[in-house]
Image (cartoon, rainbow, N blue to C red; front, side, top):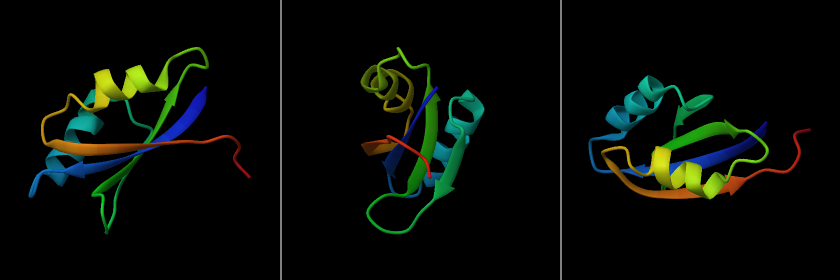
Length: 78
């Protein structure tokens, strides 16, 4: 499995709605609320051969209330 993170900017007042939608979809490993430019930090896993870009575009960015995302691809955990 390949881990990666997505920072999510939600519409004003919709961060909890987006977090709940992610939890209900059961596609995220971990969901954190954050302060700053983005509202949520979400950890995902995909199979090694799966395209992360397609996953984010099709499974994450289509959720209601999301304004913007920033994907962080990871290489190694220490």
